[in-house]
Image (cartoon, helix red, strand yellow):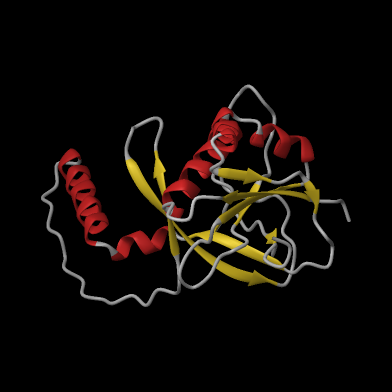
Length: 203
């Protein structure tokens, strides 16, 4: 099997907002993956210190292309955080083959459980109905959703300037699914099934 590589970023500040700083790291990855200046793709995100209570104080990136990881960690934000002694960034290492696989999955359905998201969806449905010349008549649906453990990553859209959340869940995986991540480095409920090695025993 082709070798995979990983790099780990540890947050050195104890009282740091884990969801916020993880979001900034994921934003950098997102920018790299969408940039027309490079050809890098297939980089997955892992949280080696994930627990029931938090994302943990580390974020890792995994890829079959070690040069992609080198390029990513040389981005100005990461270099600044290293210089300020807020981040400790490891070398790019080879993933041991005996590690189990996990999936860090973005679940967009979780957002539907929150009042703000429900309000935005209603406003969007109303606007679309009016554009079609129809009368908007919302139907109240009372249902409770049971949601498994998740943690949230705080994001900023460069295009719209809006803030939003990525709701992430962690699942074990019996197999390796290669490089099928979304543009934030996560798997999804549908089209992206990429997995990453469980790095919790290494960091």
